[in-house]
Length: 155
Image 1 (cartoon, one colour):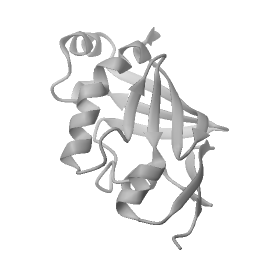
Image 2 (cartoon, one colour; image 1 turned 90 degrees about the vertical axis):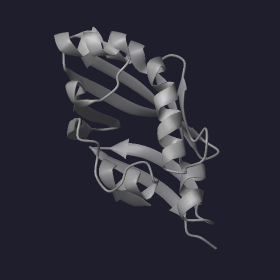
Image 3 (cartoon, one colour; image 1 turned 135 degrees about the vertical axis):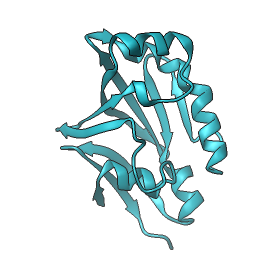
């Protein structure tokens, strides 16, 4: 079992290059909730509705919780708000951007998918296989601001 920071976990999975995007200003958490604060004004090329919303309320706080982990895939619920408004309702607009980012980083297509009801499917096994073949992921969770990956070592 490996307990690590969000930055280190995302770097290990190949999703970020050793640091969180500059728009992320804080990461914390309590229990099984990971809280990420972002300044949406610093994100380039946002869809028009989101760009308009960031002018009114630029600070977005997202509370993430792993709802399920099955067959290497973590289903993460996203409850985000900006100035009290439900920002997670705009999560569906991120699908194309996520696909482009995966392709640019040469990560497996579909390894991060936006699901209905403000959820994200994170195929931890597929992402880890791309970087550390043979490692078997047995669990993925958030604990007190950290990421916990339960894995069996490569054979």
